[in-house]
Image 1 (cartoon, rainbow, N blue to C red):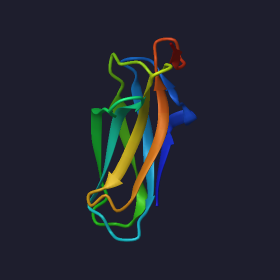
Image 2: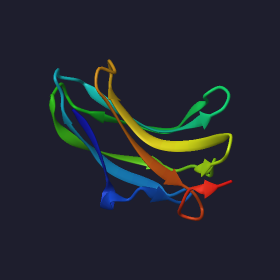
Image 3: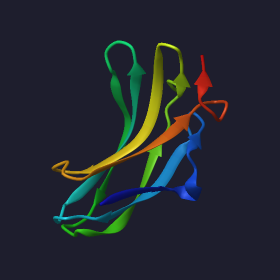
Image 4: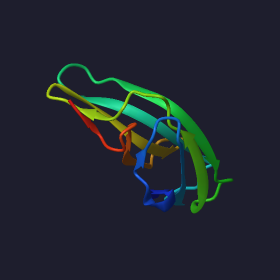
Length: 118
């Protein structure tokens, strides 16, 4: 089990803001590290695009239970938005090195503090 806990339960971020949190883990098998990624994906018509904007690695030192802190930097864009044909969704994603266990948490990155509706 992996759990993403954002500092102050914050889920809305401005461009260039630092995103802080921790990963709580109770894994079925010991792992050496957990990778935490800040990613966006498109949803809607057409092909799906994905992009990793920032990444952090938490060393678990072969342990299967514990927690570790991460810091990621929100980029200038693209902003979280929802349109009639396509949307851009930002999320924090984490997983063990063999991707046997993963977790995701949706967030918003926008200069207006909420998803832009087009």
